[in-house]
Each structure stands twice: as C-alpha cells, then as structure tokens.
Image (tube, rainbow, N blue to C red; front, side, top):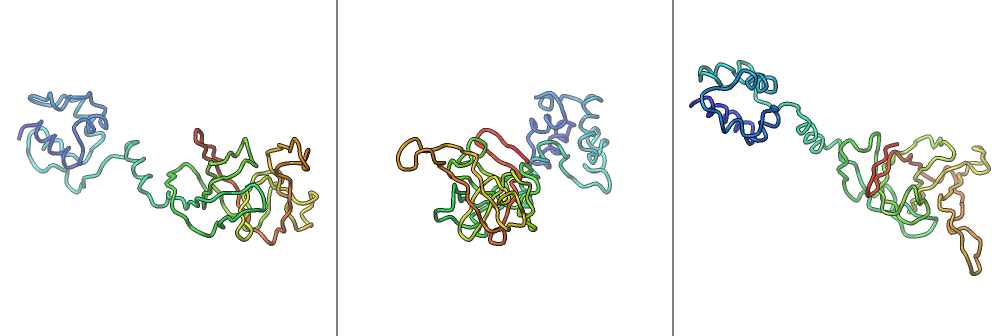
Length: 238
C-alpha cells in the first residue's frame, strides 16, 4: 500500500468517511483524494495531534503496525463526539410525563408518580428529576400551554414566596406562583396564585378573575421546584 491507501485504511477503522476525517483534523476538503506521493509535515502534525495512537512510521513508510505499541484505537473527543456521547448517555434521559399542570383544582390529571416516557434532554435541564407539559392559560405569558417544564421535588417543602412551583395533590397537578397563606408559614397552608389576571367581562361573574387564588394544606401536597422551561422557540434554565 502507498501512503494514501494506508491513511484511508486507518480512516476506515475509525468508521469515518474521508470528509469527516478531514473535518476532525482541520484538513481542507478533498486533501486525501489528492495525495500522490507523501503527506506534508503540517498535515501530518494535524493528524497526529488528533490521533496520537497512529504509528507515524507505518503511515509514511509502511513499517511496523498501524497503531503505536500499547495504544488502542479511539475516536478523539471532538465537539461532535461529545454531543453524540451526551445523546447516548442514559443519565441524560429525563423522565417525562405527558400530562398537564392545570389551571385550577379541577379535571382528571395524572399525578407525577405515573411514568409516561423519556425525554432526551442531554444537558438542557440541570438538577432536574422530571418534566411535565403545561396545559391551560393560567400562567401565561411566562408559562404558556404546551411548554415543558423541568421540575425537582423539594422534600422539606420550604419555598421562596412568589416563586413558581409545581404542586401535586392526589390526581391533581398545578403550576402556580406559591405563597404561604396570609404570608405566614405557621398557617400550614399554601396560597396558589396564577399569573394570568384576566377577568370576566360580563355575566354573573363579571369582574371576577378567570383563575382565582386557592389554598391547599402543606402536608397534603408534594412540591416541585421549576428548574427550567422549554418553549417552542426558547429554552430557559433556572
């Protein structure tokens, strides 16, 4: 084999195409196809920088083995390989529940403890246990229907009043801005407030809020901190 054939043989063992190998090594596209006699020192150094396990003597002169002694063949940690590794890493698959965090204490909504599937998020949400889909308009515009929020359970149920949380009570799941009732933790109750301040314009409920505040007992619920929100056109990590 000549030097071009040896290089192509090495590339084949990497399961790469010539063009992919050239991109990884920052070599101009088509360089390998145009090799005639030898490889220039600058190009050779670029290749060896990415693949130090490649035996330089074997590549240039065909002597010895393809790989240097005690070296194994592995793909270099390029941006593409890192992203591929993240995509395939099971630890980056977030448990996802295709259910709605509702507008109020009504409706047949599945609890967080019922698994629906997996959401491949890679490193988009950090410190996140689950993801749920928002339904209803009670938290617009910041948390629109259809958006996906990452959540993490707060075991001690200590909240920062005025912050958005997801609350689970039995078969009901709500995303709300949370306060202590009467701003006093000792009441033992949360007050759940909607961001949407829309009011009825006519009828028997004229002037009343579409999504009024309501209360739940702290001991009756599970509390989840919102760690991030994925909308159709943006990702926000909290």
